Length: 451
View 1: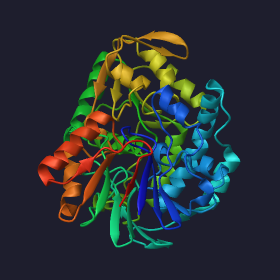
View 2 (view 1 turned 30 degrees about the vertical axis):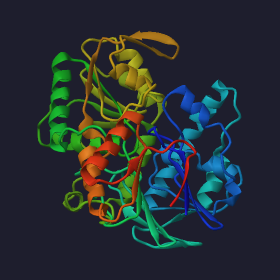
View 3 (view 1 turned 60 degrees about the vertical axis):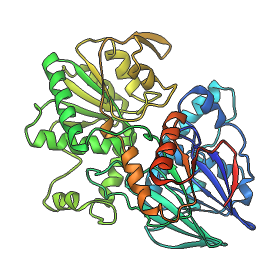
């Protein structure tokens, strides 16, 4: 078997791995690079392999940095099958259609051709086949099985067997315990593993502590009569926030105040959660029991979903205090920019980051203490409070990554540390070497290895 790393190495985004056995080629993920302008420009380059020769693509989960170039792959000649869990496919269609207009803006900015259009998305979805966890798929010499990665609804680790060897692509692994989806599954053996390392050098706050911190920040905002802005990814992060805000409101832990979900995409994605909400393959026992008891876990008094632009603009007329959850999660686009332009300069207000902020993103600049930032071409002073809760990350931290890897350490020949910035990846690789005495390395872009 030959493995080549075409993305997601020494960087968090752009996961794209090619696995070859004799005449058969499969991909695991085909994602966009996100973050700084430099990496975004790389999305417009031709694929370094011939898409016509790819038999199948296996998708770990629906985040754009894992699926974003699939329509481009189709446009370049790929006509094989795409496989994922059912929720991943449902999410992917919404996310790919939503990202199309953003990519058009990027293409115009960089004077490039459009990566794809909505027709390419529709045609890509026709190639997409839904499979369940542990439903075996055979492609040539490859036997493939999906395990629950516990990262977002329907997320998977991809386990590939061929030529008497087993290789596992972790995908993004979940921060445990997740509030409503099932926990991460850990395969018990492998010869080779690609493990994500987004938080490879740190340990999160306890999940239980994050709700206490959210409560504190909302109470501070109420006292100061300001606006709490929360840039949040439309998929999973927003739904986790809704779920936990629901608990805080219903249990009287925070005052009742207007809470806005100002993201059309997040609202549509929440409907997918509701579609699968009674399926024990995806939701944990506690969430299912709550829903059986009649609780709407993604709705509560005071929550307002602002689908249209007009509804979004009306938020400005609602008196403070208020909470606004809006996309995008790294403040690179979306409605959050309008709220940041309005409230970043307000000392009574606050911005709360609940997810990873990639190097070069506006969110990272604010989090790192920038006193002013440029939004829509204008300089905006940053005088509001800047807060962070790392416990809301949907990614496993270093301890959780090590625990996931631990059952496989007996037969492991090598671990490839991927999907993290260089410092985080290097720290995890060293930890694996020190604790498990297993060879661990950081691959380079377009590096090939024989397994």
